Length: 277
Image 1 (cartoon, rainbow, N blue to C red):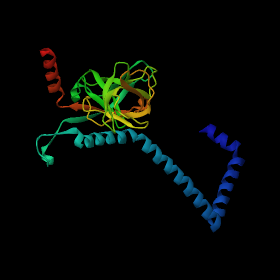
Image 2: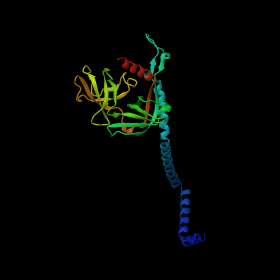
Image 3: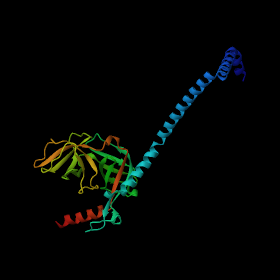
Image 4: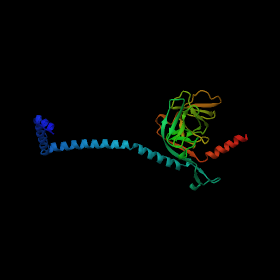
């Protein structure tokens, strides 16, 4: 307290000047309408900018919650698509919606780890066996195909990315339905793939969409990419072509794991068929 009194006494002239200056400004503004209006406008502008910045910060802090809600909503809508259903009827021209039953279920998951610069790339997601995830399930994002599940823990799973030398999915040209296989190119470009073993009868065009076929572990029609070049090497009696991938793997944040309710039955029948050969 003593030091404070010494400080005030030492600089009393400055404090008196400050008091008089503030008082004169208040009187000047209070009794002059133009200056008063100018100060109010400036204050409102500063306050408005402050609230706008505060609102932007609040929006940024809640962005993750908003994204999580959107992903859950997208999964719910995907589960209602007719591509996720099968028709439980035969020989009828008119099919009622009551004949459609769920075949595919979409489980949203967050990407925990991801790589794009290796020859064999993997993705870690925050869903596992406790969420119904199993080995061999397909994984997609809003843009298209991502890969397939290869390892499963209770709470997490490992996805073999499309950017992997051993990944190969059944694909088809969207226009003429000619089937081939999509795989990652040898040049390790994370934006390019190869559509191989397409029939010579096909007449593909640059820019044509490439999608999953009925023979893949995905519902038919999920985007894989677009034909970017018809001059890919190899092929022999078949056509090979370069494809620009639909998914930007460097920006993956959320994915959907596809649960095919017929997968176990199909795998069992195909395994029995191999034994009988």
